Length: 536
Image (cartoon, rainbow, N blue to C red; front, side, top):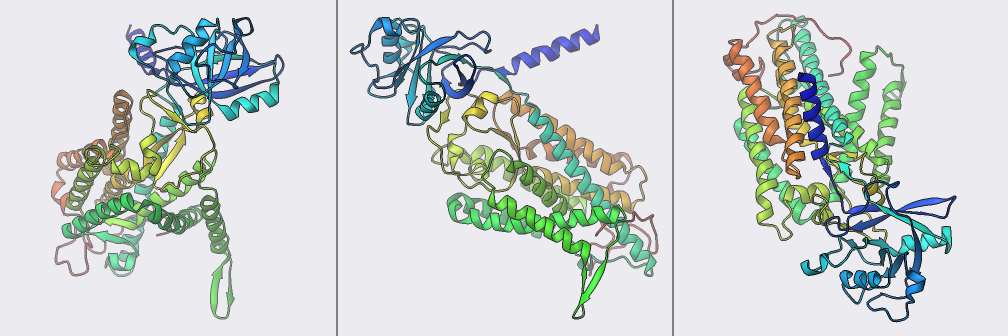
């Protein structure tokens, strides 16, 4: 019984998640050959069949020499029972449709050299039109003519796609795996440093000597967040200039991060290295090869960064390495700093996503505008009103600050232009810093079960699931930190409270700063087991 109820609930959710999009497909064939093209229609006005098999087959008649605002020059016998292809302009869509309908046509395709938009009309005109109506690119019709000649036949259909796209699952896996790996790496490095300190005479290594950057002062955290706000505002107003600077910085930083990650993997696998010297300078063959590979990957991404079809794979690879290295390099010294930083960034995220649309000219949030580039104002909303370029557009530069995975189920939409699910690096790094702190605290208290690290990772996973669920139900992008920060902070605090370790968890690291007069949490000379092979 329970299984049956669960199946029914899942079926209802799946069906409810199906949406009818305004992008559709024109399937043209001549018997042996077929091709598909993007069209834009209005589902609430002239709905189309959802499958190709159910779609009616129409002979296509080329009337692109006319805009069909009246019946002059058109013979009813030549168009009756056929689909007409006419040019856009001079009169409303509804007028063209009524003229075509009066001539006995069974469908109307309007070829356009302008941006394709969802066809609309006055409310009084909707009930008068009974034939399918859609816009197509004029260049697509010319292409079809070259391929098929005059004996073209077409089917119009609009397959609905599910809001629950497989790309969401891929994005979820990328985020949780990156956070978990980054936290594990930070904990392993911390264990190595403590072990090295114990072996060297019982004195822990300071953060100043470890190569990491530690945020230990609330004032530094406030300044850090203020700089982020300032940078975001500058990007909004000077996007066209700063975007190239950010791209160059990303290429350098991501190549360095990828090298750090691959070098750590090589150490973990026990791969040896061969060194040679030139003029008293020692070089590692492994390091040179890794450096060449990482630089090549970053350069390839930089050259082909606007190639949507496949470059997202390299961007995600570099993004994962960047997030991992950031989580390992930036250290939060105690839970107090974690609470301050994550809370401020939560307010920052919500403000720039939900509040700033009230102040911008186009009603798009500053966060979305910066993340998606200057074309963000044309972003599709719920598939209701869409805009599809009629001609190939010069790619606009986008900041490499998001993970991108193409929507696998939106085949009709991909004919009109690639669609992506995106997740900002900040939605991985910010909670990831808390996960890394929890992993280090497990090392400090010698927790063999890694209870803080595991519980924080689970909280992050639940927070991501809630984020995607709210996004699907609301139909709009969400500031992920609004859900991730409370889940991870509250979970970590509850674990510390239940274990009676809140005082230590709140106070933090054993070597917070060089001039700290606090007693360390761990007694000097304590040696925990080392995890060999990590590059720290």
